[in-house]
Image 1 (cartoon, rainbow, N blue to C red):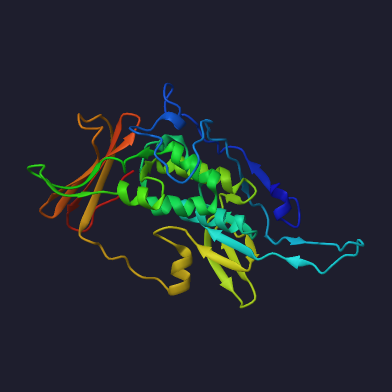
Image 2 (image 1 turned 45 degrees about the vertical axis):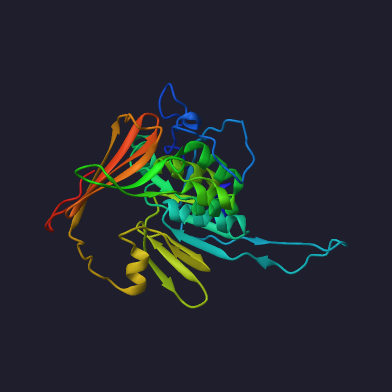
Length: 324
């Protein structure tokens, strides 16, 4: 379990992080999507319903190496040379960090994910920030772990089997329609889906495993001596590995320390977003629309379970404040 990652069994289970399963009392997560839920061309149909499991994470409590080594013996029982696995440290337990961790773990590497606040993916944001996963991305996830890919697709809302595209923001006239269904069908790929970001992270965190994710572990610095890399956490703890992957988001400490500080440049546009309990009259024929206007645009997308996500980009002067 978690203690095996340390030279001393000093790690404890962080049991405060538990993930809810259902989206609502009436609609379980595996059946919450919307229209034409079962489109998938490569994987075999599976009628078994899969719920999300509770996920625990480790709180690292010591300054230790996170190395593992394996011993093998020949047919006569003689011990052979020790083989040490490559140790990969990942800063950040978001979608990118967790997908990489899952892929590396499947390849047999030792992996540790350092996440500053795993509770950020808990249930209060069940519908906050849905994310669209295109066919090629779903195929990549299938190549990493078919079971995880199936779970993601069961939890997602299919939008690729309907009309999607750009419209005039005033008249609603279609400028262009995107056909993502035909290319997927022709190549035997899954159909594009939309899924709650929180749900996706829950699935990935459960698949990666509680012994791999160190919660309350904010990476603030690293040292590279040529033979190994050492991450430094906000609490002062240090961990050694062979490779460090920075997946710590837009304010990445890894990137800053690797390339030096760079000031962000405001694009000139501010994004507003939200989720509405609303089912349009054309829900069966339209997945999402992008309404184009002058120096602004508005997007509405079906995200399943009788909800629509909307977001709008608006040209505004610098100096605004992020809100949550």
